[in-house]
Image (cartoon, rainbow, N blue to C red; front, top):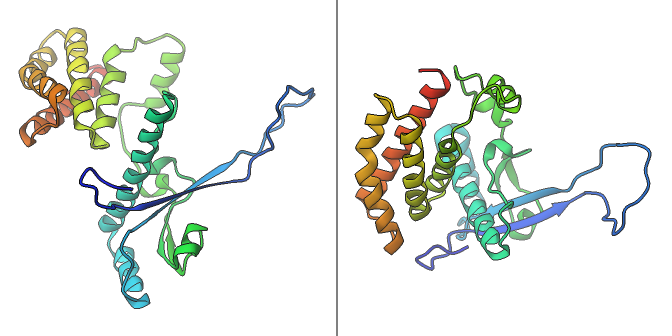
Amino acid sequence: MRSASSQLDAVLILGTEGGPPRHRRPRSTDVAAPEPVPTSRATVVHPSPFGSGSAAAAWLSELRADEEALDLELDSAVAVLNRSLFARRLATADPYLAEVSFDRALVARVGYGDGEAVADGRFAEALELPRPGARRVKRSMEAPDERFAALLGARTERLVAEELVLRARLDLDAGRAREAALQARVALEALAEALASPPAGAALAEHRAAIAAAANAALAGELDGDALQAVTEAVRAMEADLRRHRLGG
């Protein structure tokens, strides 16, 4: 996979295992038994090989001892995968082809080995990481399960801006600054209207001019550093206001 600078960033290898055979016609059944599902495997390979087996082992040993470096390695791999999924979504015009996160993975491994073996899911040595829930416990007072039930039961009202802010965050995290700026502009207007009373409305209004400028710049081309910072700060401010709203503040 190449970046905008035409440099080879990584090699992405995709594979699918398992799953039931496809049936072309409906068939009779008297039981709703669980069906086996296919499992997708994505392998992201660095474009430059290690100089020796000892160098590869030392790299993996350093990652084992440095959780932050290991997280960066995983984030980089997920970013490569999501870039390909984004391109696939555009190529197929399929709005339901979603990007992924490490938290959704069944298993994640970081390791090294010979090219063909690694492409087939076999390593000379690898680390198998704990499930994300065991590694990254998020503490929150927002009670998402209770709000989920309330939304399904129509006991609470959703804000249009909630989904728009989530989309802006996704674009921002994926490095799609232009899309994030355009999404943030609409999200800001929707949220400012919903939370018109001070202090939320006044605080969001402070970002309006900068976001409008960033969105206009996004229509013409890539954003500069100041515009990207403005979008980042606005998205953070909107997320904070939405958290306060969900907590009843």
